[in-house]
Length: 298
Image 1 (cartoon, rainbow, N blue to C red):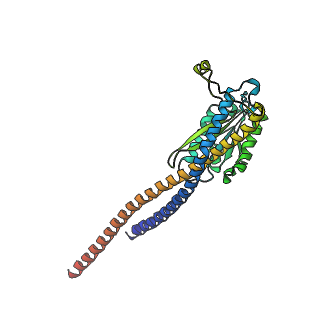
Image 2 (tube, rainbow, N blue to C red; image 1 turned 30 degrees about the vertical axis):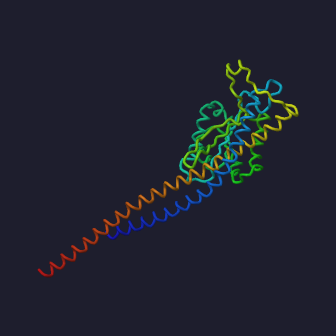
Image 3 (spheres, one colour; image 1 turned 45 degrees about the horizontal axis):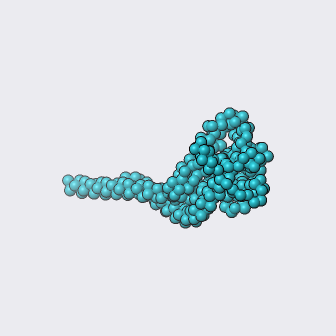
């Protein structure tokens, strides 16, 4: 019985230590989450408004005035940028982004089998999840640590590289798979078309009403768009990164909170088990003493 007591005591000590770690990680994630939430809530309205404006302008342009960033081409080669975290212990956060990437690949099986899809990984966990699940894809890992610096200038280097490759015809379509931050408990995995810039679908009613936006361009349309659109796309890409950054800390805080609760429940069960074993041990010792005394009197 003493062996069982010792084993239970060791398990209680181990769970206590684990609970202290999960509590500390929860507090650290909560502090980081506050800063990350502030960053994305300040960035999102600005980025979304710019993106809507860009799509609206491009959707209302005609022929020669259209931008090279909105040109639809036959898809001969494409890229998917997978944005995840570099660290785990965040529940299903990274796995959900990986599963969303696999959903995108389902639509391009022919390109995948021909080796015409490049997967660009930002964050180590996306690579860990997909490296054995994407046969035929080219795995690009040179920018895996990009999100370690969240500054606009740093992130713009990657988005500019993607834009250059699209303009040169190296890629005909580019997706970005990331997780949109809602709150600490909810992050929605999304596959967003980065390039070409998607156009609004104009309904027959809208055409009949002739609701096209009437913009006055100064300088020329072409000159303005070629300078404005890259800047807007870079801002949108920074928003994707900030979304994932906030989502990671929210998911980790939630996961560590749940782990702390589970450890607490386990401690209660172990303490009950320990007390029962201790009572049995004491009862057996008393019975042995009583039995020995009875034997001596006999």
